[in-house]
Length: 462
Ligand SMILES: Cc1ncc(COP(=O)(O)O)c(C=O)c1O
Ligand SMILES: N[C@@H](CCOP(=O)(O)O)C(=O)O
Image (cartoon, rainbow, N blue to C red; front, top):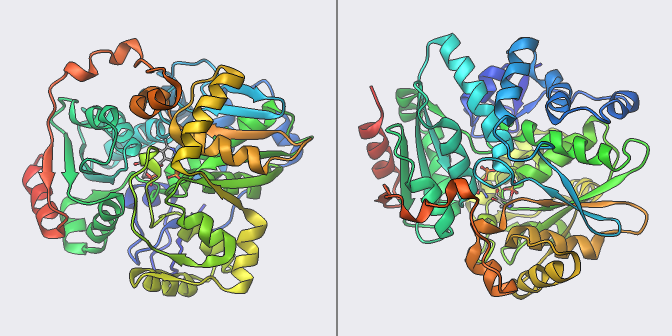
């Protein structure tokens, strides 16, 4: 299995190399050269299997010879052992035909744990075997950062630096990043928004002296392994509702487009997905683009679903690559135009995107109302990101086809918004009950590439 860049100018790599490399050296994102498929019989056979076994069968064809079967099974087992639910990703019925896929039973209470716990194990095995050490830098709007810290804290061969937008994450998210005491963990509060954090991260990858000097690695969904791990729960949930014998639809609260893109991959692997719906908050650049208005950056307005406050949606580049018939130079041209403010999508590519995705948006008011109405109708207390999904799913689902909305975070990560909407302040799980009492450790940093690079160079373990 070989991996190629969306911009067509970077070395072709193995799974392990692509995972450790992060951003391609031409600025693009790695994708498998071909997408393996599963037959209807192979998918039907997932029924009744453990999450771990399905994870093995779905991901194995993408791994090539980077890990042996025994190694890979062992890694998967360790990755999900700490989840607080035996099903790992349980389904809950909200209303007849509308289901929530609860993705918040991992250690940091968001869907990011599914991929991050896995790649923590994958990195550890690969780095030990190679005798290498890496510097992981991550950009976060709140959830990737805490999941990465949890997955990599205390590991011998890794330093972790997380850039988060100062004042734009929830207090729980911030404390999850600033309270771990491990020496290899560094939380950096950047003066800017998430797009600034992600832009500086990509700048670091494109600064080859720095990149090679610190052995930079990435665990954002830049990293293909992150997306791959998220493909699995599309299969487990769809099969639980009758796939491949019937179609199912998904609505995905979306920001950086990694989670919905994993659904797109599941469909291309053979999972019969009917509707794949992108749900955005008031930062609705993706909804506007999928509605035919081009992809033009605006100001990011802070919302009550802060993890989705994103304008430059990294994985949309991967969707564009397929929409433009895998033409790397066309994608590179669009990404150049994006630097100058945005681009229009060609008619053919727009048609391909429209065949793949539907979209919708929820305003702040609609998000609050949905938290309240969902509680009233089903007894489920949901986080604001999930509420964006539920609202859009209700508008786009069709009778006769089950709709699965991805519940991407636990409501306790966003207690202020949830309390405002429902009157209930969701408590943190017992194991995190002292989060507000733990001392914080954080460095405030300017939105300046040189300053960030100097800080990292001065703080990596030698
Ligand atoms: C809770 C939550 N919901 C939804 C999203 C959006 O997911 P994605 O960035 O994969 O589109 C994020 C951020 O990634 C998130 O943290
Ligand atoms: N919402 C994310 C943003 C980063 O997304 P990623 O999937 O590329 O890591 C977050 O919570 O940090």
